[in-house]
Image (cartoon, helix red, strand yellow):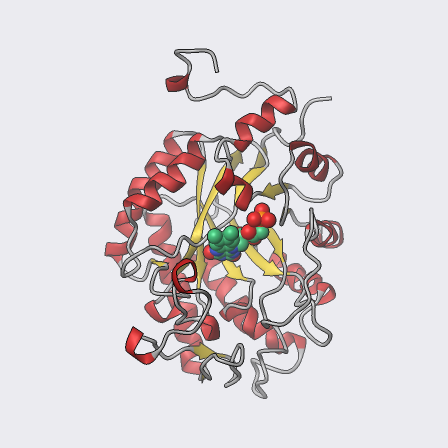
Length: 356
Ligand SMILES: Cc1cc2nc3c(=O)[nH]c(=O)nc-3n(C[C@H](O)[C@H](O)[C@H](O)COP(=O)(O)O)c2cc1C
């Protein structure tokens, strides 16, 4: 039986050489949003390691949309130009470069997590005013976000569209819209963060209005032959929050506007949710969305073993798997998984002077 994990996947005009994707992982080490040598080596190594798609970490559409001062940004042409170095390299390795476009909303303005832990910045550390659907803070020590006006919402939608245009101009082939983990778009979706009484809050149709506007604006400027993905948190893991049924209904609407794949993560809306994390714990969400909506999905979360990944694809639970921390531990996981599954994938020619 040939490996399904190593079978190609075609979406619009893009062919992914296998089903192993690298999910966005924020390195929190950019200065003023700019791409650095660290980023080049980090993403370049995973491209050499054999993943089919590399989704660059949360890249902010505006300075205030950064989670921390260390986030990458694409709010100017200067920022965009610096990314061309990595998109060229990644493409040269037969790998698809993707970018996650993001706005952190009320979860913005926090310290660099690997330096100082996840905590809001103090004024003297350069804290900035955060935005949100409602003046409801994320957690006890977090600042109250500014309740966004209609004009603010339109402004953020335009920032996503401008960021998408810049991304495509420097060679990204996949845009992933960050609508998960309690960041701005997810804040509009979830009743735990969105307490508005205007056309952007209350009913399901109202809560999805802003995220749908973002999806539409990006789809409108993203070329027709290139895919747009949306990352969702399929559940808040909290009674009365966003849940799988709403995710399925939302995915139907995204599909009808030309979104190509739903990347199914969970959680992040509130700090105190009880999340039953464990091997493959989010995969059933990818399976449910795929089977109900008939849209391609990607599964993520504690996927670490070649046979586990193979089974997810072979069983039709998802069209691709995203390996986060496992690719941090081992960038060559895809090449090694191919061996374990007895599938012949060539190692980089530069390494073949001796037998590997
Ligand atoms: C260092 C680190 C940074 C992350 N940054 C992001 C991010 O920028 N955007 C995002 O959607 N998820 C982010 N995540 C979540 C991962 O994309 C992934 O969903 C999560 O790690 C679960 O997958 P895993 O069990 O394979 O690691 C991050 C995870 C890690 C470990």
